[in-house]
Length: 409
Image (cartoon, rainbow, N blue to C red; front, side, top):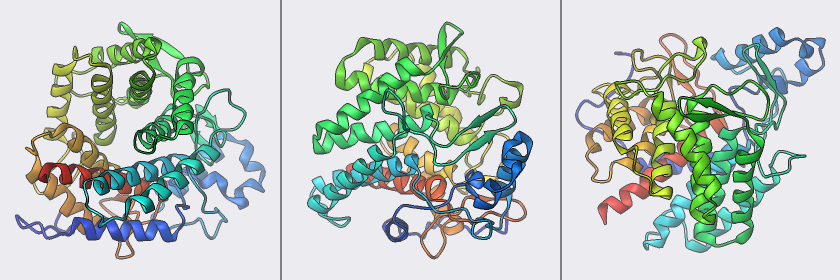
């Protein structure tokens, strides 16, 4: 690991400077950008008959995703809004607004931050998946999941919908705009009525999308439970709570004895990784918080202990898998900041957190402000991806800055 910089036991970084550089970059780009999976948006590819062949689509996407050199300008992939990215930016600005409520105006005034929240919330509503009965969101590109599924652009998914609608719930909480609440509650109806449910171990797995067959992934199901828990908190609709609990029961009963979860039920999904584990823990936290159901607190603690013990090296390097470091994906430190901010009430993980932040800024933030996608053993991908890298880190850093503000009060 000698090729990666680390300050030893002295963590020389300026978190606010790092965040402001990222913020400036994203604002200058107007929150539009590329994505690891947007290869099928290529105007060149769309002009060929290859677009009708599943294997060709898969190879094309992977050639963009895995290539350390950015092919998008050459092959005419436009920079666009991504709904999940906008949801992450929205939630990040809400964190800054909460900081400002304490009297700290270093990230903007209440008026300016409120304007930004309204702007992004309205944009997010405009980006909803078209021709759907309920509010829901998908990605701005076609993408091929192995050779199993083709997801046309804007196909709604529980992951994108949860990130977007949760941000709208949070926007309503600070702005009190009823429109935001109604859109978020409509998204809960999408999860309840439009997604499939597969019985599993005494509960259900909520499907990733309304398409048939994509019903084996625990983090997607738990994110659906997270959104339903938000909905229950604001509406007291018992159907939301009941369905959320069924998804939680299924995941809890599928938890390994050491506290971990595999990604999904299929043989090709039998891995254990960092940021999806973080998604699971975050979803379980919000289920417990909003429903006051603490029946699973020991399982949550076991999962959190496994997470801290298995996904971070002593010098702060965030591992991708529990038993393998590479590729070091920006989601891993990003989700860590979110997870530790909601679980580490007494700042007990402060030393580890400082190490992870220091390593990530030193090794994964470009001098222009954006964050890299992945660090690999050989050629790393330092392409700027707006949703995957920048929006994710914008939200994560803002959440941690808000957490740090509260910890220091």
